[in-house]
Image (cartoon, rainbow, N blue to C red):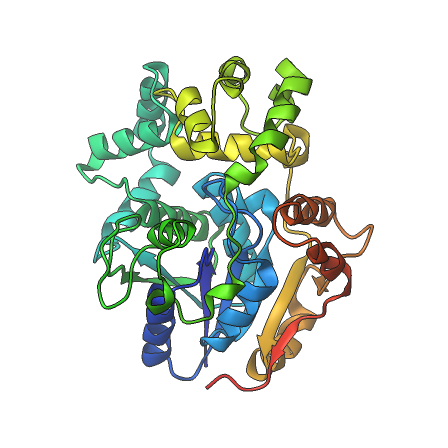
Length: 380
């Protein structure tokens, strides 16, 4: 029996995700499929339109056997940190194969690039040269790799796939990896067989367009929210703390002065990001930066993070049976809800839920303590 791992945000779950799961089930009909999901906020610094519990239910209804939470401290950081947390969790859960979406057909290029990032001294030298010229880190790494190999990687899913492969190689995890090519582009607006990007679905939904044919669940699960809902809270936080905001994770190199200058002249969240943006800072990095300020996620909290628990959000009877089989061999505690004195990372997770609930649903705070894993008896 194959144990398959998937890493996802499901913001929201859509027919492209269902396509991926069906492809996995076709290739490995006798398998356990485990998904590690980010919950309240995402890697690009955005708010999730689905809360973690509804994501879990939808995932279980659509072929997933076991749903695990990716902690906020990993879920909202750069691709390498995001990948580190997710892959470590999946390795603890004894997967033998990870399957991910890519923009390219073949991942041999990504394997080569991962080896270069780990072992090639010339690569490190070139990265420093591009950083010294004013490039942001993502651009510097991409240019350095392209200089050495003539291979260009600049799309989100390929970059994440590269980070997954690198983590597996660096830590010598006994995990195979396979890719499934995306049907549509990562943030394009094209729709092919009712499959389109999650960003396009969010855009359509927030603009009151019909998305019923693009998602395999009732749209009433979705919150009609965006980061704009937090703008006034963020503005208060920045203005009241002023230059002290540099204590927050990813607020580096004097960028706080641009943030403080921009917050007063920006009418919405998108405008704020554009006003802060420079050549050295990508859109996504600024989005994460603002999210870290909003949630009071400090550099101190971000230092020395490690996976010290695994939180189970839900499972099928098949997933539960597998978990019972391996739990004695898992090196960190398996938990199903919030308790004090388990982990600093879990304490942060509760804080994040409280902030998320300000614009979504206040009952989510109680659910952190009270809800048990969602169970689906059959997963046909």
